[in-house]
Length: 159
Image (cartoon, rainbow, N blue to C red; front, top):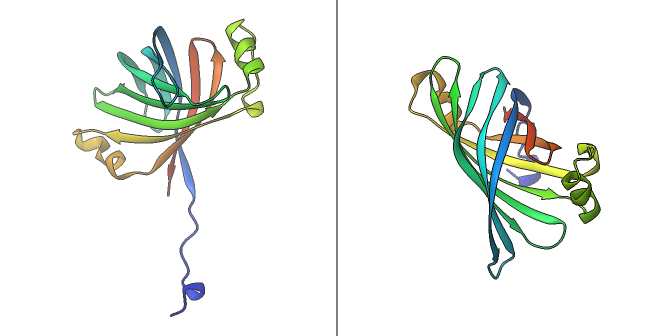
C-alpha cells in the first residue's frame, strides 16, 4: 500500500468543561538562560460540564517567557469533582500576547481572547475508577484571561 492510499480517521472533539482558575502570589525566578521564569500560585477555581467540581488551592504555573510575546505555560494542579474524586491536571501550552495587551490586562482592562493566542495540552491522572477514562484521553484547552488573576478555559477531549 502506498502512503497516499493510507486513510486515517478525522478527529473530532467533545467539550469536557468550562474552568475558571484563580491565581495567587507570583515568585519571579528571573532570567534563567532560556528566558524569564516566574512561578504563579494556583489558589482555587471551579469547572462545570461533563465533570464538575473545584480547583484546589494546590498547584502553580511555571511560566517561561521566551521573548516579549511568547510564554510557555507549564502547570500542575489538583481537581476535586463534586462526587469526591481527585484528579491531577498537568498542562503545557503557549500564550502569545503582545506587550500592549499584557499591559492592558495588568491595568485591569479586558482584552478579547480572540485577539491573542492561548492554548494548552491537558494531561489528566487519577486512580478513581469513575474517571480513569481521562487517563488515556488526549485533551486540549482554549484559554483567555478574564482579568489579571483569573484564567478561563474550555477543555476538550479529542475523539
